[in-house]
Image 1 (cartoon, rainbow, N blue to C red):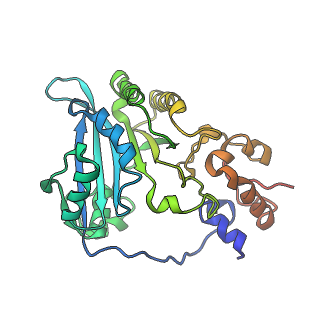
Image 2: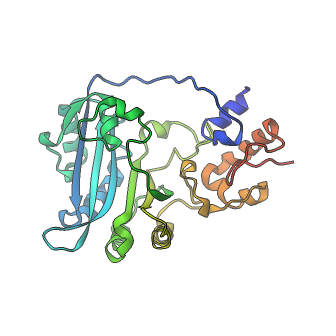
Image 3: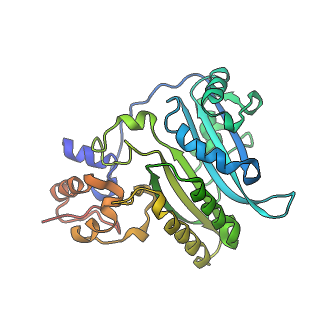
Length: 308
């Protein structure tokens, strides 16, 4: 297909360029057993201090260790008030002994113990990470309807510098002060590691070197009443403006955030969503699109435009 088109479809949104019938994938090795743990911490358990420290640890710790955070608003059964619960969800490509030593050296604030850790196969850890925890067979991963489908709105950001403790305290207010917040989820996914070794231009996905972590904002609901939920996620996103990447404010393509703009011409896309998703790779994607699909047959609200 040519080097340029092959470059473009690996991170540039394949739907802009054609119909992809098959992929050939090179797998990477994983050990026979990995170690997984999920630890919950709340505001009352010094969450702000722990998550502030996480920002400095997670992107730079051992490449075999991934510590992501999922945050919800829950009711504290002791007080009846709302609090933030953060789940530190972790997969380590190795055994429990080495993981415990790493955590004692790099992130003792989390308080990991041997009892928190479970060794399992890598594919079992994928099943648990997908939300299946009741002993389902591995084949459940092939079932496209195994989990309920809700209405959902997702937005994204990339943190290139640590967020202050005051910044996190401001986030907590969105969950504790707003009645809609119980439907909201915030996910922090650390970068660094191998991602830090791949240049921005290697493939169209540019959010690598210099990124500490990705922020995913999610709000889900049943039924047709969208206004409170959409308003809440947009307000939180606006609050985060001064804490995340800028010029452009980066975003993750696969969340398809139409709030960024829906312009289909080059000029419209270049001043709205194009640089957010692709930064300096946008113009090269436009050049490839113009070459392989000059009539712009493959298009949608945020597809790569052509340019005369």
